[in-house]
Length: 455
Ligand SMILES: [Mg+2]
Image 1 (tube, rainbow, N blue to C red):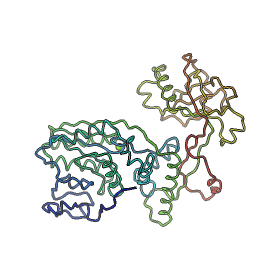
Image 2: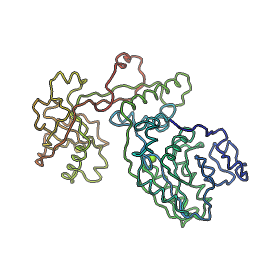
Image 3: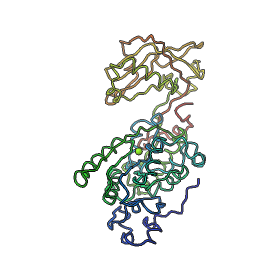
Image 4: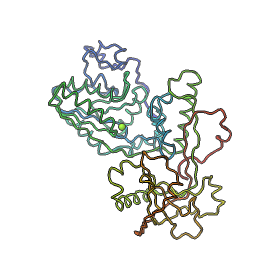
């Protein structure tokens, strides 16, 4: 790990260069800087930039365009909490910054330190597999254009993340006109980002065009609202483009992820015990909520089957319906037990089992499944339900899906297209974060588990 530690926040973010230049910046108090208030009219780039390596900001006279790039899952594929490892509620809890002390998933540097093959290895590779290369190329063009300000802006907290993000960008040789991380007392990321935008647009008053790249629709909506108002009130001739970027979802290695979440909870609980926690939740613990031996569908098969079904049943899977479904296609359950119990069933546990898709069924218009039968296996294939089926997906607003409901589908539609999927014998485990319960049997909890989604 070679994150540099010499950068200090103690001076309130005033760079050496600004101190030397004196002029306007000396009027800004540390208090104001911490609050994110630029009252003296200092150049907003030097005021908001956290990299401390913008020698001389581009001058207002020459700038006609502003290009703003979000970092997480726009420029860089940072890992998200893994839905194969945690239930939805737990993922919501981790993603929400006021539930756990230290702010949860997106406020936790430990996640950054454990990305991919680990910090040092990935640094050496310039984080090769983590970049959205289209966005990286666009950023390069923006930076090289003398009339454009190329800004990277993220809601990640400056104090916690500047060293990590600077080093990642540096390892790749990525250049920018400003690297803005959240500082100041803003309630939300969009409040902070629109303040930075206001300062830049006010100062760089010849900007005619703004382009903003972001993966989150909620952020783009926030920008749109702001830019509508700004255009109307201040600069009617301003043109803006909001460009949604599709994220490529990356996860941590499952065992590592589970261990990190346990560590996060320990830190949280220790603050709760000391009475120092400002988070909404009290003492919490990680509990196994779900454990199956299963035939786990391989990623390629998943994609092929899904595109086959969407094509075949395009009257059902209209684009609107597709948007409303959580597609699963994850596994065909064998037993609710640990793998050893499953083995006692003397089932076929070849690493790979192929299945033919025989029919398609819908339950109450909101849950979908296909029936499957094994292809060319010698030993019996045991499944929890007989005939076996694979859950395709559920509409988001529908009641919690139970397999019993899918099993009761009667009007299955036969499929004769000879579509097959490949699966691997393994275990599926999910965890959830729950309130610590005094009655909870800790001995059982501590028993070594096969963590991870597939083994
Ligand atoms: Mg993002």
